[in-house]
Length: 103
Image 1 (cartoon, helix red, strand yellow):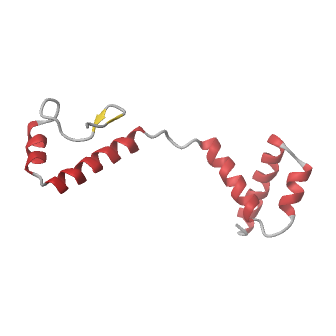
Image 2 (cartoon, one colour):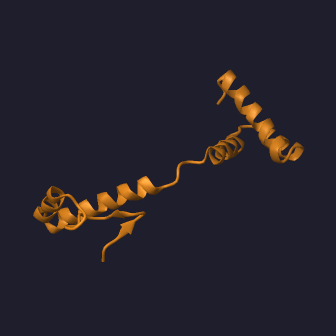
Image 3 (cartoon, rainbow, N blue to C red):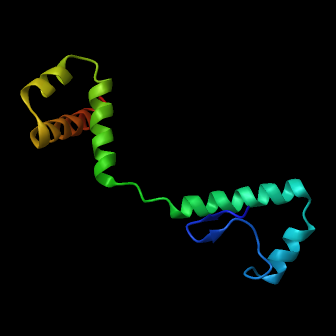
């Protein structure tokens, strides 16, 4: 069964591939062909993957900071603020920690 990922073929095809790619593929052993297919498929999936969302990365940074904090400040932040205000307070605390070298 031929697998196509986001428009990329998973192995050379005599109709659509360059002649030299097809010939090199045909000259490979079965194990080499399987490894070649896996590399092509993996590369296609990586190319088709969505870019990292900067907002999600920021949320993840805030979560890790709250999770890893070494004192009770995290609980105070969460109890006193919510939503965007909580984000701003955490961002300020992260920036202050970075300036002090406490991160």
